[in-house]
Length: 324
Image (tube, rainbow, N blue to C red; front, side):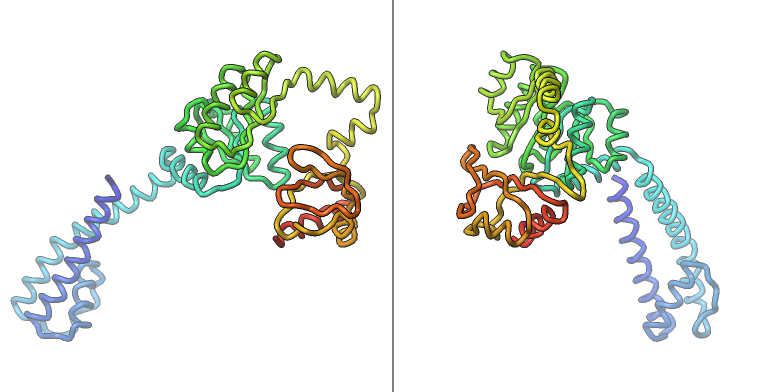
């Protein structure tokens, strides 16, 4: 409503300037530039003086412009100030601007639920330079998420409209870690219905819920209790291997990362990739299964590679991917 009113006032103001310019031209016969100058000077009350002598009709016309134009100008300036203040302070306008930015994203990740697990997932993904949109019904939880550089939406992730606002139809992946198996199941069903190609990872508290989520379309289902138990056992039995496989080992001397194979690397061999970057290709993941990374193995479209090496060497592989 304010925007329409502002456009109307601006149109009236321009019309008044045009009316004044034509009026002075007809009544005083000055040049078009002098007539425009006189009109703007009268409306803004600057008072430099007329470009030439004013006749009686010109004086009456000036009085009319002052009475009508100055009031309109003051009202316009007041409305402009009100609009600017509201744009800076209105939470609804801020929310709409934020959601417009979210709708421009593509290949991003949506995280449903910003508890302890959701926060850990979101921060790790953001650290890997992924665009992340967090959905949670608790505004106070999302205040902290925004300080981490995350996009946020206050709402219920089981609502399809909320998922659409998060850009689920353009997203590459979705993680649902709400502390409720029925809610996570509903999010899986909704996300897959809106975007069948999206990769969905869900949290489940037991195997029965996990089976339902897999049938609903979840690509992976994680039980955090079982996962943490397995991790503790692995740390007892093989602590160094456990740290390596969990990604805890990462420094300038050694890091390990999974990377998709872009078009620039399709047709090249594992040996060529290692020679060009210095990184060690630990395994190639193809058609859902890992295969041994033989030097002569030719990389195909859709493959993923598990690469290890110094941080600079792994970054070199990232650079090749970016070049594709």
